[in-house]
Image (cartoon, rainbow, N blue to C red; front, side, top):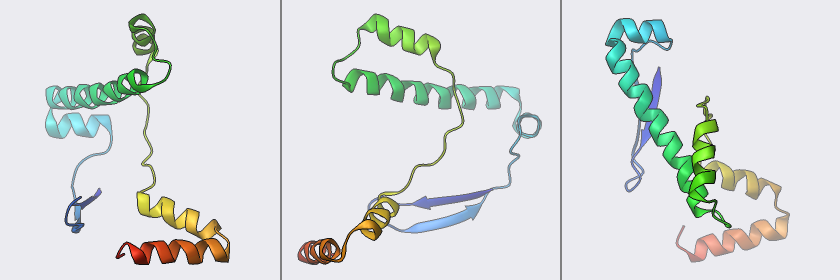
Length: 113
């Protein structure tokens, strides 16, 4: 499995290979059921916390009872990696007309980009 990491402050980047199974049986065989279960629960807890934070920050904010109902109905799923800010910018920039692109480049140059 390929793991790509970028340091947020220095923008240094590295890609490494991690030899690990990608299916449940293989993971349990290599790491044991307790390790797999603990990591699974940890990841699910972080996902659920994100959903709860989103509810707390929404307007209007749901009641504690409504948030609990959301928690009760939640089921983990497979998350697809979102686009990086750079990828989003490139897509947006590609859709701009020539005048908008020129203005954006002017602004970026003024920022020292």
